[in-house]
Image (cartoon, rainbow, N blue to C red; front, side):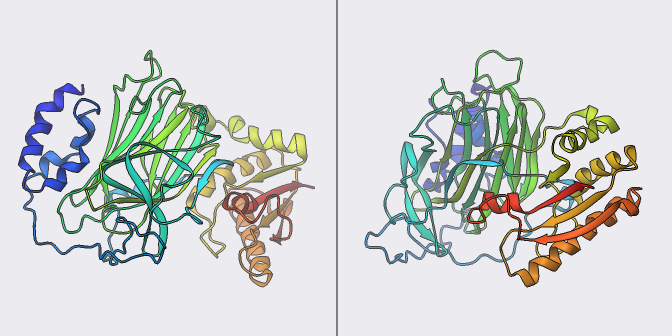
Length: 434
């Protein structure tokens, strides 16, 4: 499959020769799958390059004792709509894994040094500041890094995990852009021999997100016949920070850009042990990465039989039988408001079906917040959110007589509010059987 695209890619590369930096996004032909580089650029490659485009890097120093060639500020980009109107049906169901196993916000790092929580696979990377924030700059046209988890072991991912990161690249001058990959390998495999990979080219007006993967029935770990693309689904080369997230649950790959799901693979071979991030970056125009989080746990695995009432209420029944309460972090609200997000209704539906199946059961519906903000704000907000859940249950046919809304604010945390993961656990709804 890889060799079929070699001739096409060579032709494209020759057409782009007027802009030498544009070829930085290609890996060496003998080492990297050629088809990953295409990224739909065949249809766009005849774009006229403005060689006199203004530089967006102004080369300012960060104030560190050690300067960095990647240390610069970007001018702010004009507002950009990151999604086509046709993508309105995209899902926003991402939930970070419950146990963080790797986290790097780059704080405390020295500009110009290699990031201390990472190892180098190939090329070069260093700490930089961009728009006032410390980050990793993937530089010299071939930056390839891997997180140091538990001293560098290669079997830390398992079969249920999430990965998140922020990334910035600016291609507004249209003078060349890299390809990006996030790759997942079995512990026995070297880098670039992935079970699955998500890759996207940062050129063109809109970006296409691709995923290649090994099917569950295939032998070995690298026979990636599976492929899916989200064609021109986003704009992520505008000099702004964008958030990327991936969830893997036993067999399902889901990938998100700025909270919207763009890749949904139902069946992929399990067995990922470690991961890498690669940028074919432009020389003197780095790709920037920050706020990387890897966690155990993933978006709930979709099973068709869960549409049955018995399957829907199984988790609620089990929790009530074992603990006398059902606790969930999957009922979500708009920030600072008591407005339920649409994706919360599946969880509320489970509780509603349980209560209709057990009409004598009464619940105290408790709303809990993290400690961000004052009690004067959080206490009434948690009460309003609990009332919103009660109203939603009533709308699904539950007898309101069996429900009582109680706001607990941030007074009963179940995790450390000093971490993002802890605060996420504290933002919850509890259904206490009475």
